[in-house]
Image (cartoon, rainbow, N blue to C red; front, side, top):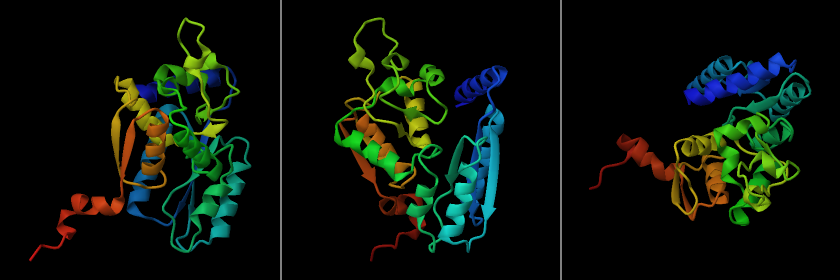
Length: 247
C-alpha cells in the first residue's frame, strides 16, 4: 500500500510540474455513522499523502433523495473536481440508486453508476474480458487516475510484450469506470505475484460497493469460479455472541 501511495504521489507531482491541475476528490457524507466517519478520515489522509485535494460535503441524516442528488450534481459540474462519490449506505428514506446515478458517468470514481456496473456485469457474462496488466502498478502511468478502461485506448497501453500479438493486451469493456476498491484489491494481489486466472475465489460480503463488484471483477479477469458469501451468512462469524445457543 505504501508503494502504491508513493507511486500515485509521484504521478501527481509530475503532472503538476507539467502544469496540470492537481486532481480533486469530492465526497458526500449523509449523517454521522461512526464507520462512515472513519472511512472519510482515511480517505482524507490518503488524499493528503498522494497530493490529491479532498473536499467533503456533509448533509443531515434527514436529507431527501433530491437534496443529496442536487448536491452531487453541483459538485460534478465543478471543473476542478476530478471525481465524486457518495458514502453508502444511505438513510432508509433515500433512493440509493437515484443518488449513485446522479454522480454521472464521467466522475463516478466508485464505479457505481448503472452503466459502469452493467458493463462490468457484461464482462463477467462474456467470460474473462479484462486483461490483468491493467491492474499492474507499472501500467498506472498509462491510464487516468479514475481507472477508465476503453477499447479506444491503444493496446500498447496495456501490453508490455515485445511481440506483435495485439490480442494479448486486448481490453474489451467499452469506456467502463472500474470500482476503485475492488480494482485496488486486485492490484495489490497482482503486485505480490498472485494471479486469479483459473483460480477458485471466495469473496466475503456481498455489498454493492465492494463485495459484488469484486466478485464480478475477479470472474471477468478469468477466475474459474467465484463464491459470494452474503453479509447475513457472515454475521455469526463476525459477531459470534449474536448467535443463539442451541438447546
